Length: 231
Image (cartoon, rainbow, N blue to C red; front, side, top):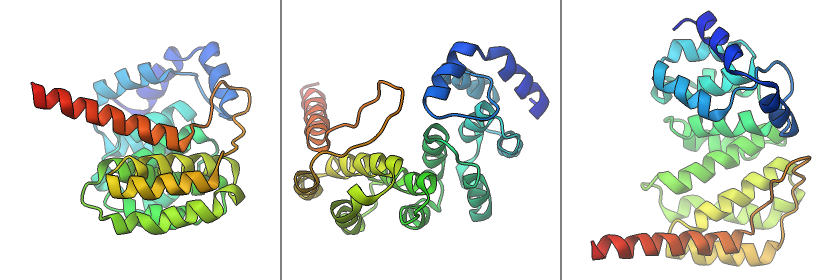
């Protein structure tokens, strides 16, 4: 599909109700209001098309940019391209999907380290979201990789910007659910920082309690392992 064809299909799939929902979640600027379900169906049709992804991101249309993160090839993302895309971040919906893409690239660890230190809300949030994904998916990382991040969460989470606090809390949960050793340390951090306040605006979203979520994830893992062993 060409960029024009994709934009035309996105426009046809959009509706005002979805646009209203996205606006409540901070999405501004040009958008068609395409649900993630329809974006997923379109991604299945296109599959992977990195050149098209670049054009869709450059269009500046929110729905097209979200789709771009779905069809881009993580192995082809260069540092320059990642940094260029990151300059367009203006809401947490787009920030989260870009972080998900970057977490699959060879530059994921580097970007997590760089961006998590940023004072800019969306870039800082993206860095911690990447760390969230690394804790959940990168089995090769040693525990020592995550310890400095736990120290930063403990000392600085309450001083960071709104959505950065949310992403740091999410990273704490993923690190704590990774293994027993990190779980003990993460639970200690969660106890020290207490409740994390995040303004979710006009939405029904809530900030999860890190300690409770870590325990729930571990419990589900243990139940799953138990069922697998019995099978």
